[in-house]
Image (tube, rainbow, N blue to C red):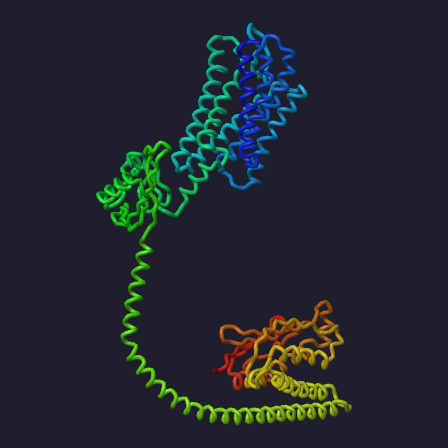
Length: 618
């Protein structure tokens, strides 16, 4: 055993003791656990050096190297895990686990190669005081390993830079400076002892990286003890509470010079910390002389004093505050410093002003009370008289309302009777026409009777929808279209495969004055399509065409649109729109122009396409 072996034992025990100390400080903290895992990896890494750096090693060199590999293959990933929780750059727990896994997998891969003796990072040499490692460069895995180490170093450097940019408090900056300084010193040790010295003297030198790492771990340990990096102690908790407290908090030393102010105070006066520290805290207030006198009295009498002063702000305005001065002394009655706390009085002063205004208003109300009482009595008498008159009017109003209700009931009965009679009369006409069609008639005569019958059914459908509607002026025209289409398909023979109906009907109500003529129009167009558009001869010539009737009823921007089209044989080639020979289309033209005051167009490129547009008058 030599001096290097003894130092290795001390470093190993240091890693283990420090890891346990931090772990048991707050074992529920993930940061503390990460630090403990890191120290445990360093312990495993350092253990073989106790034997290798000694002259008499009970284990063979390569066995020691395999044990050490457990540490140096996993330590880079453990350092990444520790830095992730230390810096807090990435907030999501799943993201932290993913990043740790990405760096852990290569370490496990290199460990597997080393344990199975498929690759070694270094060759082990013996010389006069100890064993020595020299890096082996004869394998591509060595190059990959150094790429892996470089990636770890770059990622850790990125985390530390992001962490430093987030810092605002002086204590945090000091903590960061200690950690980064010890890290740089460890790296400098490795560069000098592990690289520069062997190159200068041209001979191997004992590997002491595990000793250099102890400097960095010592920096973390000092931060742990000095700045409570890994646990929330009462002092840290109190400091956080004071910093986040929404009150004025100023701490001064025994000379009354400011040593600390909380976040709320700095935001209130709008001055940076560097402009406040090491200055007498009376300079923060307008009433400096008064404050100095009261400070002297508070110190002399050892009392807890309160003052109403004006705090200076960065824009030159005065902020009214109420402060309390606490004299802090030790057990020997020696002055340690002052604690000044208080609150912003602006809201309090506003409330006081509002209270004074309300008191003045209340006083004015009392003075005018007698006048108001007289006016109230006079107004009460007037209201009593008005109330009697109102009761008489209400009685008359009730009689009128009852009469109106009676008239409405009679009117509803009369309207229902009219509707029933109209429907009965139309059904009678339909029955008469049906009786005529049952006789032996020519096909054209029978067809005319069927068209006439369908026109009357169309009018009957409008009246039935009107009867079922909430009021007697608007018709559920969408329901009318659905019912009419069903009746047409039943009444007309569709033995040639049947007509397919494709509908796009909006649920839009229509005034009775427009519903009846528009119902006639739709009936005429649909009947024309069913009778003339899909003749047996046409369907026989076009067996692959499925006869289809298209119905589109919509409302947009005040206009109603009715489109009836088919894929039948269309209009005759000699058909002229301005010379309507067909009685059905002549009826459509008259109804569109004279009844609903709209416009219509007809097209027969493929089948028949009829579009009707109208806007009801308000």
